[in-house]
Image (cartoon, rainbow, N blue to C red; front, top):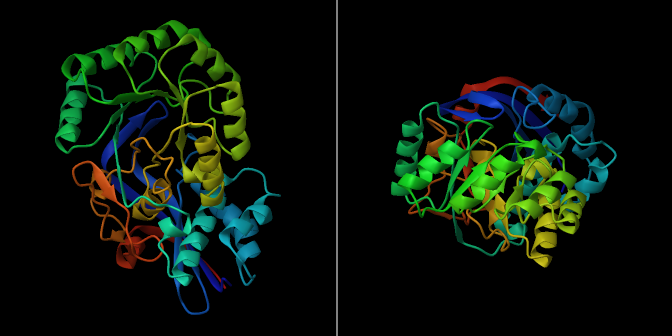
Length: 368
């Protein structure tokens, strides 16, 4: 496989609704797309799931684009690539920058699958043809607004509800939800907003029969999560603490949590995601696929990785219409009765709507 052209698109897209977490509120999404082409004009697409500011992770859109331009694209352009797995060793000298690495690696995985007449899911070793999905809901100023949204998502048959929490916006919110919805599959996501000083608050969550509490403590921390997990019954799900296979291995050895949320960008790409999947399967650690407010291209990659068999919990890959007035793929991602079907077409299985991509593009870089 030889890459002859690479295009990087910087996009700004307005989300259908604002989305609030402990980091702040987003409605305008800034991110990048990577398009690679071979000599026959076949294209592969990846998404750089950044934001304009380094809040969730240290990367941000402009920095990732610079990383692609100066270091990563020169490695792949006009060079023979036997398999997308080989990119890991070529990218290894460059520290972190996982979102940038993942974006071009994902594009090459898409192209590889197309060149080999495979869906991306099958190229990754996925076996599932469909899977259950959940929904992620942000922090609301009014609890009644949140309860209304939960009812809407239950009526749409999403298979679990995730609610964002933060200090001072936690026990009362969860209690109100459980009073109205005592039996729904429910989890909370703290996005690293707590410390061990909040132990008593976090212990109180045990009474609400939650599926898990996601990333309660500092990003990257494994030791304090292990201390917390010993003190609470609710399973801890690690998100921002898992950036690599070694992070996952150490978390399992330390018993820092009982569940892992996989985000392809956060761990540096599909190859690393596969390795973490296999490790977790060997150690009976269930996985689910988290969301980064992706466009349809990133969403398609999430669908492909979720087709692997140890993704056994409903993830955050909701329908396109949950986030966008109009997505940049055709057809859009659709969830029916809480189930998402894995596309069977070549590569990511969706067509990229170039008219829609260009409508939201604020900058384009071309490399030949």
